Length: 550
Image (cartoon, helix red, strand yellow):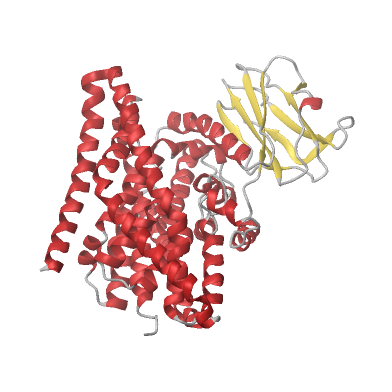
């Protein structure tokens, strides 16, 4: 009887959340249409409500992760029993990420969403992408973006004063030159990038002599022009076109996206911290998980002397899970506020329906890839290794999946995921307390699929304005490898999703500013890929559960 009541309560909770999401979308579309700008104060109130719910979820993440991981280790009795489940979990994460990237590449090549995209849309997106790249670079703390503009007029004019154009000694720096050729020219415009170590004597950068074409259009360096390590001052000499109308040159000094080697280095270093409290404040879970495993493992070796602290950890873990159950009673209201706020803002900006039309094929590619990965790949793995029915399991995890869609954060959803996996799906606490926190940190199937598909879409769109660009098989292989590694090693990088996307684009020489093509719709697709990430984590917990020794 008790089991039936629990099942009924779970079903009602899921229906409430589904109703909240549908109601939120309806309010977001109808509200601005009926009330116009007067709907703004309503959105502000909803924004506060959604933010409160999100903060409540985030508030409990750090103590829950640390208590649950320690509790799981202590429940094993011997930390050495973690070896096989740990190896299975890592293998699962890596394999499913590779499967996801492969799926994304296949789908986007079949749909071919960028083939017939409007040329003006690509050029407009480039300008929006430039601002976003500058924001990402500044957030990485590796220096500032320096920008020159010059309209043709003075022959051999120096664009920018060298004394004001300085770069940091740290990091890998490069220059991207863009020449907008307006009208048919007899002699195309040229830009020559020059560098100096002391700001007095300048010399040409190797490969820094860039010439536009005579036909109207936008010409961009491919790839970016790397700067010598000794370069502290940069300037660009610009020789305007002859004949036709004016041309415009823009040059940008940008910090290079992290290399594959830096990603590996980051992946190792982000497991360790020199400030445990700092990691807690930043909700940087991986070093907290490592500490909890080591600390919990140490406690298992000290015998009866640790009985008091062991009981304390177990009690804290149980109390936090009870807090999550209480918080879930507020979930429908919090989720309504989160979804209504984001959709309403897009609708009030006049973006929502327009974006659905202009980006329809791109969205179709990504959503189809995510559906195939979740509905076929992950479902097949779940059935093969556990003999669970995928649809039933998805229903048991529905609250977590819907919460992930609403919050667009695997980390914020983690408490709900753990509660659903253990109490609804019947996954043992040994697995949920170890696999799910680790998965929420490094298992990003949806993100990897999205980045691979987005890179191919951008490449197809770029070919519209530059027919000489060919997306060969070897470049697609590079995209697949880079997207896999970037998704795994992204957790410790500020602006993780954006920066890892830059890594993928940089790997095949695509203009970084074309990230503007995917930015307008990214907020919506982010919710779907987060839901897939969360479902993938829960499937992993169910599969790895079988490897724990009794």
